[in-house]
Length: 382
Image (tube, rainbow, N blue to C red; front, side, top):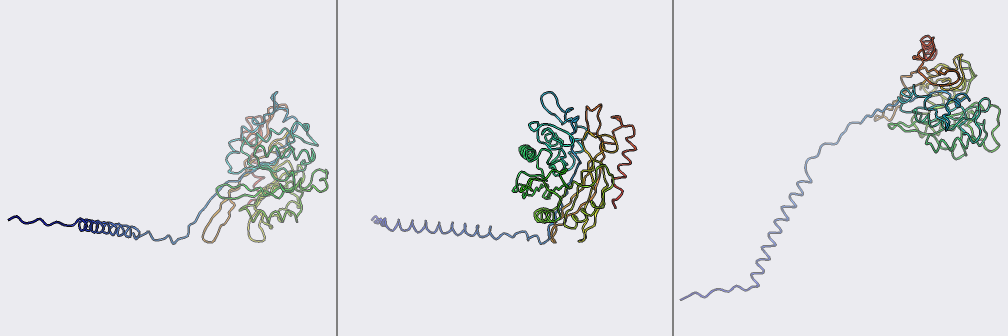
């Protein structure tokens, strides 16, 4: 006799399948959670308990007066415009070496619209600035005794052109707001603040209520600006127009002002106005620092000749920033000076050349002059 087949209700089958599926899903979920938990608890590298130290270094450079006499800009005229780039070609490799390079733009860059002119009221083609940028200059000082040679219009015209060109400038300003803006250049994480003042403007008075046009040496004003610069930068550089023309040794007044500025926190002083070179010096401060001073950088390019007025140079100094667990520390070191010479033939073909190679350009005493200048500039360094 056949056995009767046992019929299992569909409901029970569905329930069993559901239970099996649930068990399977729980197992998968448990395995996933275990894997995830294990991954999150992998042993980690122990934290670094040491203190990181960082050192950055840049080289700061400076050249002296860019004073464009009529023969110089006449020589730069090519029939269609002004091209001053050839003047700097022979020293361009030297100018490009510093990480930051500053120059003293002595003659007003008011442009042809205001009428070109020479001594005693200078006004130069604005294309001078293009050549400076091409040669490697990063910022110019415009605080000097010729800053008002074309009045307020000259300053506005010069400032507008330099702004358009993207060449920072310091010392003369279009308005008070511009004057209050610190000029700080940042290279490799080292912030350099540039300030500039002049002893005067050749007797041309500043318009009443517009004292912002040119920075005139005043200890109270300088002290305030130095304090602002110190709070925003690592190094403070002062370009100073001072001293007596054609004197190769600084006056007592120059040294007194330099000591005041050093004590207030200025780290580097680049001097101009004498049109001849004056020595370099380390000046000790009341808080134990050292300030580097070049009393005069002389003429870098001009139409003046003889009696050391055609000898200038490129000064450099290394600026090092050390960051440790104790904070940051700034170190100035390795001051150098490379003499240059302005050569020309009958008021044409003006060129700046290394003084060491000036014999090739007609200066028969080049070697003796080079040795003399190197000794003169370094005689107060210790």
